[in-house]
Amino acid sequence: MKQFISEKNIRLLFWIIPLLSMAMHWRIFSTDLVGVHLWRQSQTQLNIQNFYRHDFNILNPRVNITNLGPNTLYRYEFPIMQWSIACVHKVLGESITITRVCLFLLGLCTVWGVFFLGRTLFKDDVIAGLLAWAFNFSPLFYYYTMNPIPDNLALCGSVWGIAWFFQYQQSNRYKHAAFSAFFLLLAVWAKLPFIVFYATVGLYLFTMTAKVGVRYSGKYVLAGLIYAAFLLPAIAWYAWVMPGWSGNGVLSGMLAHKITGSEALRILKYHTNHLLPALLLNYGSVLFFAAGIFYLFKNKAYWKGDFWLLAISGLGVLAYFGFELNMINTVHDYYMMPFLLPVFVLVGYGIKNLWYAGKVTQYLSILALLLLPLIAFLTADNKWSVEKSYCNPALIEYREELRNAVPRDEICIMQNDISMHIYPYALDKIGPVFSKDELPPEWVDDMIRRLHIRYMYSDARKVDENPAVVPYLDTLLLERGTMRVYRLKTEEQLQK
Image (cartoon, rainbow, N blue to C red; front, top):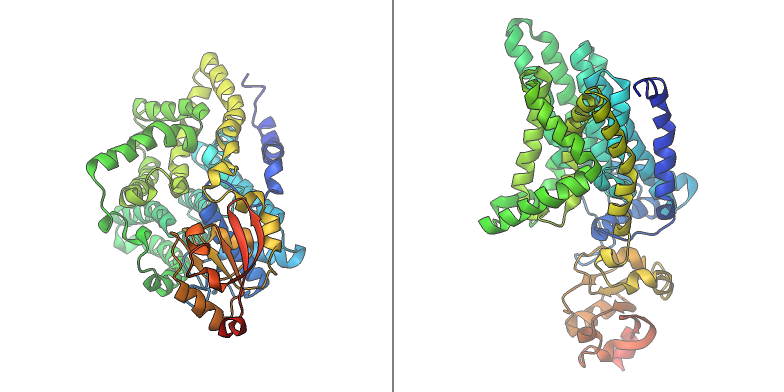
């Protein structure tokens, strides 16, 4: 069996993984946004659209909300991923398929980064290839690798950044430190929580400086300066935009939004019993994860230097999880993407020990590895559904009719959308967005007279059938499901 899967033929996975993954995702490539966390997907895709259609300045990510005025700037993470995909749209034209293809290729880059990391850590191409295979079929990765969320680039950057860091640790070559620093910059730019992986770099440089003494630490100081120099653009961006994040629950975490002990235990139970084995790992990889922990203690691998360099980032990820426990809760599974790197390093260690432990464990490993694609498909494929989108189903089922009911460039009132992003993306419109069946008639009057808004989308009967609002409605243009499209009266009509 060892001869059948050799270092030579393991390279077949470089073809099998993309082809199999492409086949399994085939229907999604041409599917418009739908499914779990449609909210965040819509926000990201609106950034891409606005870079392509209106403002190509990378410093000006925009969405389609005008509640606070005509300025639709929405600066959170640095939009390097969104802007890069918009560049492809500039060349090939606007298409959701192009967005999904770009994300799929980004996901493959992440998978090959995992292979590179595995080969660097385990010095074994077979184990590295099997680790890349297991990682590719993590249901969490399998689902989000096709969806526009900036965490995809952050994950890719962190995987390659840590992989190049261990190359630098082994070679002491500054170019490897520069490669590592560049990819870690991409990770932090794309999503600030991924800064936790700098803990590995910091621990190494600190311990090596302490080991050789300050007098002989010049090369480690220089390496530290390389990492610091690459991190500066990310620091500059977040120093600029974070003052505008007031009210952002992610920024304050548990400090401002504490939860009860029973609620915390409920969340932890969910993550232990479901999210970790079913979504982060894949039930087929639980074997390898458990084996990784077992052999970690059996072989006393925790005494090795590389273990602590990885563990410190793992502890950083756990600290991030504790700080954001109230925000992650049981719904924001994509917030857990930083866990993929430390979790799958343990998976790789488990694969290595089971693969070379004997024929029985090797056959068992092969069976588990072969089951991974099927389990990932059964776990994740149904997430691309109207039911899992948690929005008005009419928006998805009648998307084109609703979009075409009003010219694309018209500013429209949109009601009810608590996400503030799903309706503007699904309807392909810009304008003020409201929720909770609340839209005072005097606001409608003001938007008609001052902002010259002529159309309204509404699935709120408490609003559009309100006797005080009805006088502002001119014509019902379309009704699909519970969604209605109205032409509003003009200022001249209201003055009569």
